[in-house]
Length: 261
Image (cartoon, rainbow, N blue to C red; front, side, top):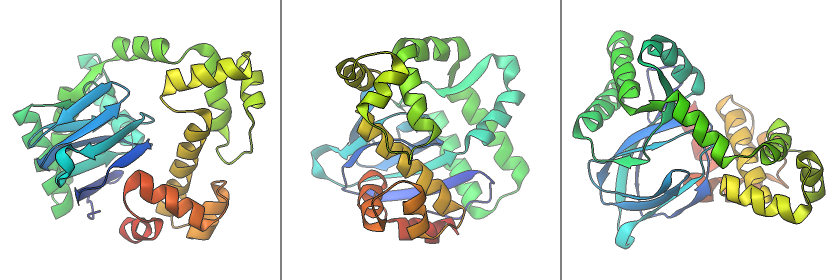
């Protein structure tokens, strides 16, 4: 993680053979593959990305990633807090855009150059005016029309599962049973189990673990001690949090805490 001059923007560079388990982020992510290639599942389909390809992820989108051929792949990513994107959306409203990234991987050299330029400027402490202009241009190129995003949400997350998901989202650390989710959704336990996985790409338990990881990561970014973040996130102990954190993000909570400072 590199120090970023932009508030609400994290800069992350990776060079890794790791295969990341399915996980989610609370931020928007956009980056460029610099070396090697990877295959990944996302809420928008299974894709491959090679050198120079732009890769994106939306908040809450389930995804994973593995190197193709077992080799090393490297990338640079910018993770944008939703508030940063919301502010940009106000400026670009005239274009009729929302900020659901449209494609999880794409070969667009111009967009890739802009993303890498913004990464370089953010990590070099460039003037905010230059960074702001690049960010707006990137989002204007990569966004999907808002009506399309709403239709996709309606197709993929039926109302009953939205209720069950909301029960987890409201308190990720809560001790919940499948019966609790069934009651919230009005479905049987078997129905909610199948429909939840079909709609979100994760079982209810796996989804709850992702929400707990996101909560713990947010607390760590705010300076919360690791043991306290684990407890607040509903993990059995700090070791439990650490194992899941490394599996999802490829870095330990301690390393993440140092970089976040």
